[in-house]
Image (tube, rainbow, N blue to C red; front, side):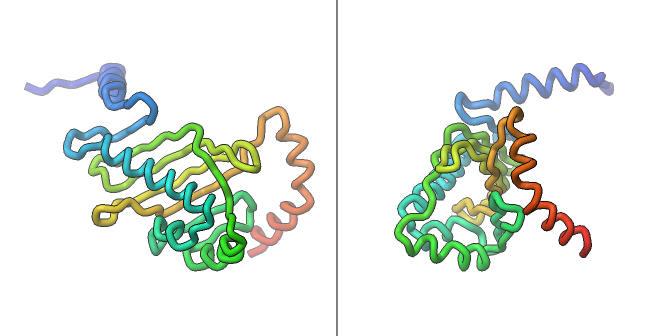
Amino acid sequence: MHIIYRAPVRRFLLYILLMTCIPAMIILVGCTGKKDTAAETKAISAVLDSLNATAARADYDSYFKLYADSSVFTGTDATERWDKPAFMTWASPIFKRGRAWNFTSIERHIYLNKTADLAWFDELLQTQMKICRGSGVLSKQGDDWKIEQYILSATIPNDLIDTVTVMKAPQEDSIIQKLISH
């Protein structure tokens, strides 16, 4: 006997499944029962908290140990996209000052794939630039989670976007022209 579920029934079952996998403060997708997803989520959160803490105290070596060798960092400026070695070179003089940046997560969402060896996240950060958004991907490497990609974005309230667009247009128009002419 074959049971055929109609789309609304499947969506309802998926909704029930997802609701049973959501911890109180961190949204988790990919609940499988095969891995301790709560422990993995806690470990990923610890990596991200450590990323912020090591930057705040300008601990260059500890900060970059959190990144995978093949990682990519994308900053708030359109020209900021670096592989790990380039990011390390760019950040070195900032860390040598004895202070880098001081970000604090104020809201975080973590998602895991079904085998709990790949995770992606987005979070709101309290920073010197006010609220920023951090997002990225981590992979499980042995017993450790490593950052594969990190994207830092400045948030812009919708009612200010027109003003900000006018302010950044002269600089970004030249970047756009350079990129589309390649």
